[in-house]
Length: 175
Image (cartoon, rainbow, N blue to C red; front, top):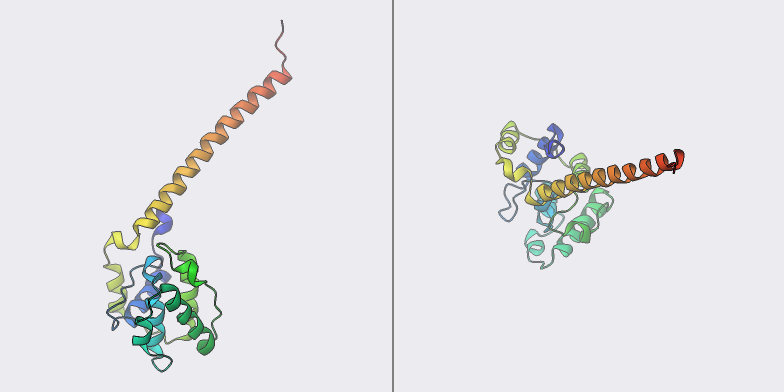
């Protein structure tokens, strides 16, 4: 579970996102996975810094998360020069890849105004612990740990069998 804890960089980035999207009631970013899957967070982040680029209400009224994600990625490419590093279909899932989201949000952080208040950082640190690690992330780690244990067990069995075969080939049983 230690690998799921937020680094200081993640806390600052999450603080910046929350501070930037505070005036968008449809958006509540609490992590770098499921909070981004509907496309609203990406669009709110862009709109909060560059409201001249698009009509927020038009984006909110789009029915599909894939459409909203595609919109955000196209705006970022055309107006900010950020490559489309993510496919909307890969993000519009229950638990998109955390590292991919972090990489893309970091790209936005590098080109948009970066002021983060201490209040915003304290707010992130006060988020309930369970919201920092989503249920999907917890399940994913549990499955990875279980898979690792199973692989270790089967490796042990395999090596045990191999050593018996090697021993029997090296030292033939005398009759």
